[in-house]
Image (cartoon, rainbow, N blue to C red; front, side, top):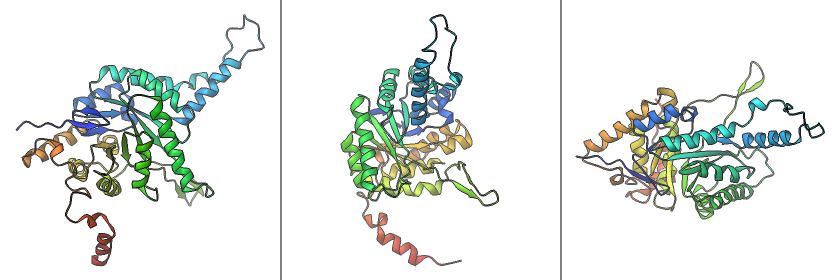
Length: 333
């Protein structure tokens, strides 16, 4: 039986539904080639951060202003820290190189919370050959005076502005903490999002009692963390016009299968690749193919969404009734 893992995501045709999401690994062209060779359906490049964009703008202004009072012969004046600037230029070069070198879609990523610089860079990514753009809106509403409506309006404003500025599809990576994720999804789609990536893992600091300090650390995700995106993938599947990408907790081929059954169009992985290396992409894709083949299934389309909220006989499994049964049925020890 011939296996066809091809998948539609954001209107793009991918050779498989397993995607390497943004990480340090995807910032290297050799790694990108290796991921493609091992079956990745697409790659998301490391994010350009809003802070980098603002820093570039500050340095450019310093370049323009520096030495303005000097004579025309003073051509060797340069502002300090020039060697640390223009990270975004290197990112644009990576987009161009990867788009030329790979046959799979190359997705550029922008990470921030305001409109500053995003439209210009989105257009430059498109010009450099990106097949799509992923907006990673990393916003922690730490100001208690800012309402949920204001936060939601900022999300939709960003998506609308970027989506209207480019002709390539735009996906938005969001967190799970909206009061109504389904309604928020509808607003983002109305604003122009062609895809939703569920979910962003927000930075969560720790406290070190011994030093009385806040510690910044990154803990790679584990499969248990996949329960939350699995829930909302299953709830939203078939209820939104946007493509659905599931991410977080994707460690094994079985995790990929779970998300496809819930209704994901693609399944993204970061932590597993960082933990095991780029060869793990082959393990995931081959494992998915083996799982499908063992059941006489020759395409992910044949299982996609079979266990989503709208397709199962007991949709309460996604709802409060099941929550009550789980709690009441638990027995200590």
